Image 1 (cartoon, rainbow, N blue to C red):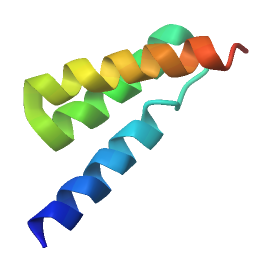
Image 2 (cartoon, rainbow, N blue to C red):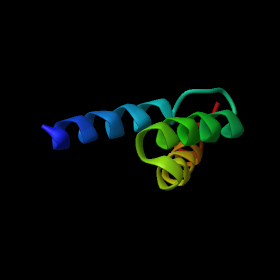
Image 3 (tube, helix red, strand yellow):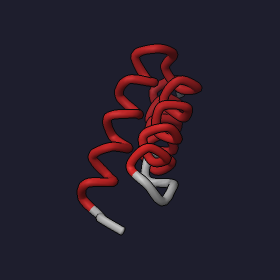
Length: 59
């Protein structure tokens, strides 16, 4: 059961990493979502995922 919850929260964090208009906004939302899920390490991973999402889909 714990594994399902962890996977669900991780998926939600990565989904939120794509929110925002600019690279900074996407990185920030990813970092916040990652911090909620996995603390400081999650914030770093979420911020990086947000930055990558911004680069993959330019506005």
